[in-house]
Length: 124
Image 1 (cartoon, helix red, strand yellow):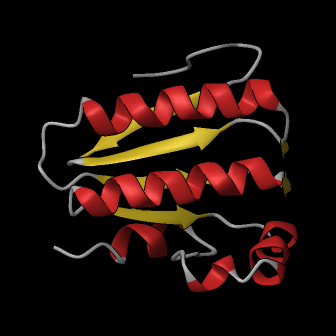
Image 2 (tube, rainbow, N blue to C red):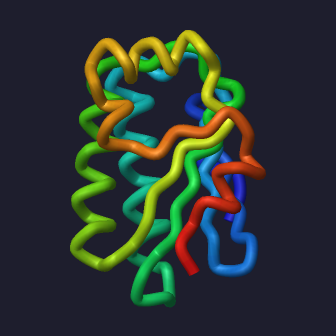
């Protein structure tokens, strides 16, 4: 795993069965980003050997997300639910947290300020 596309850089790493996906951009907007994010997430879930995938989205570099990104997260959440997987978002910036609050998606997703908190929150 690693960087997929230099125009829309996203890194993926594995840490003891946990897949960490990190968009390396401040603004996650536009169809190109959504296509790339969808591709990376689909690969991470489908190629995950565990029956219940654990996915952490590292949002530490992200300051703005488009509604299409929120839609992609909803789709990912549903896919993981079908496989008894878990999704966390860590490193959430205040500006992104506000978007989740306005859309009330903060009730649907587990958001954490730090990556360590997000990692510790996964059910064993």
